[in-house]
Length: 262
Image 1 (cartoon, rainbow, N blue to C red):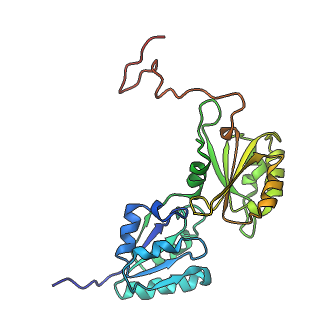
Image 2: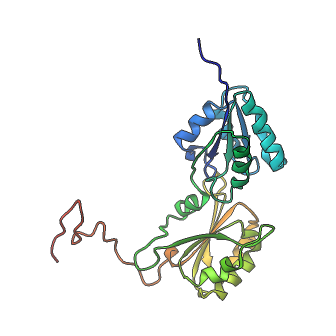
Image 3: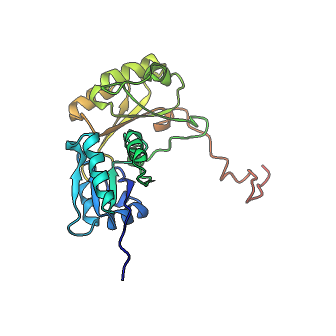
């Protein structure tokens, strides 16, 4: 005879960028055993809900406040339910999860987090590029423009652009002109390559390639207003080439291989 659950739990699951096959195995298994799912309906691919058992209650958080989401969690866990909170991409990036954790902590409700594939990496895969090319950039900056959610002044896009590192800009394509202006102000040349990837990994994924000089018009013509990653930096198209990685250089010695002499 199976033991009746007395205590519920909440599992925060990264749904991945859109392609339902890009959820992790662990995330998929959490959905399989979920008694209830609260999902970000405006962004999460509904195909993922088919992983759940028939009859599993679903709640679209796009129509809910934080208080309403938390109430669903409280009510479900009191009944011993396993609740999956399904976030787009990886929950740690612009997922508004901290405020949910605090509410669960107050009620001493156990929770865990299963990471997911962020749209930033799905975008890099779409354009077939590496953010960290030797002699080009060994740093990736993930950021966004200020909107209704403010950005600290010390993290203004123009200030971050001064590092000339590889950059991925979330939640900002709706104001592409301001993005370009800030990048130019920060020191990127007008000829700097840039990519806009809309709905990375979805069937209707769209990729625009250009430079800071041309991308605003391309985005306008394509009508892209949301769900897009902006990638910028010389890693996209290094004008003067890049250095070969030492890891696989035949002359380079490391723990697992003795290099040959030149």
